[in-house]
Length: 122
Length: 104
Image (cartoon, rainbow over all chains, first blue to last red):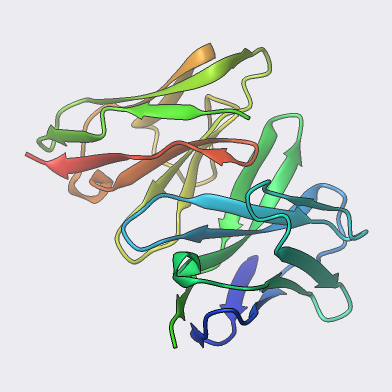
């Protein structure tokens, strides 16, 4: 059974870089049928897609964060990563990693990690 | 950019009743690539429906999805206590703002 688990610092200072790791178990990152994504949810608010990456390192980012975000992947370790630079309090959120299924039924997030709360504060 | 507008914002119903949740897209599409998710407090979202009408693995058949073009609907035929949660629609990298289904 596929499982995803986020890890990283729960507290980041303003202007610094938020870095998170998603470790995947029960499956491989090497598949053309999936992308691996990061999304976030500020406290009490809705979901926001941040970006997606596949096994060949093709990336897509949401326009509002594109200048500050980098996704990367290490298929040998079954991990993918999020770096968000120059954070402010507005970046405080629960960050989720997930698997994005792409194909004839469309693009949908079929498996999610449990989420990691990251707070931006000095 | 696609804007997905969900209505109502909050829906108050009783167990056993039927729930109808709406998702309207700002532009029409012919491929029906729309998904629905359920999220309970403190939990990650759970995929319910993809391709507008296909239930994900393990989703009870009281959940159904329908629609095309710009208007999509999630229907829960008979509400159970475990169904009270927030529901989101999604297309590509866009999510609706959510509908909170609460106990009346």
